Image (spheres, helix red, strand yellow):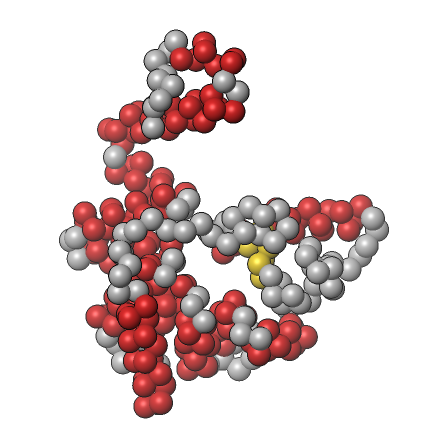
Length: 263
C-alpha cells in the first residue's frame, strides 16, 4: 500500500485539480491537440502515431518522423537522427534514461509519463508500480491530462493504493476536464457498464468531435439508422467549405440541393 506521504500528495493533487476545474463543463468541447513542431498540424490523438523524442523533449507526428528517416536513407546516413533537433536518435537503453532524467529536471511532463511507463513495465529500470505512480503524480502536477487517467487506473485496480472506485471516477473526470480524450472514452465505458448509456454516449460524442476515429465509428454503429442523414450533413458542409474557397465552379453542385448558407 502507498505510504502516508504518497497518499497525502495524491489528496493534495486531486483537491487542487478540483478547484482548477470547478467551472469547467465536463462535456465542453475540447481544445485542439498541440501542434507537431515540424508540420505545425495538430498531433494525432493516438499515442502510436506520435513519437516522443528524448533528445529535445518534442513530440513529433509519425509522418514527419518517417519523412526524415527516408531523407536520411536517401542521403546515405545510416544513423537515425531526430527529425527536429537532428541529434542521434537513441530512444532505447540506458542513454535514453539519462536523457529522460535531464528532461524531468526541466519539468517536461511527457518525460515523467515516459518514465512512468518504464517503471510500470520494468524497461531499462527495476520494475516498481510505486515509482510509476510517483511519476504519474509529477506529470499530473505539470497538468498532463492523461496522467490523471493513469492515476485513476491505480485506484480502479487497487494497485499501490487502496481500491477506490469513487476516487478513480474523480481522476477520470479531472482528466476529461483537463483535455484528455482517453478520459472521455474510459468514462463512456464506465457509464455504459453502470447502465448510464446516455452519459456514455455524451462522453463518446465529445471524443468523436475532438477527432477520435474509434469513437466516431462506434457512434455511427449506434445510430446506424441515421447514418445516411449524418453523411448527408457532412457532405453539405464539405460543399459549403469548398464553395468558400472556389465559389464560381460550384454552382452546378448547388443544383443538387446544396444550400449556400447551410451550417
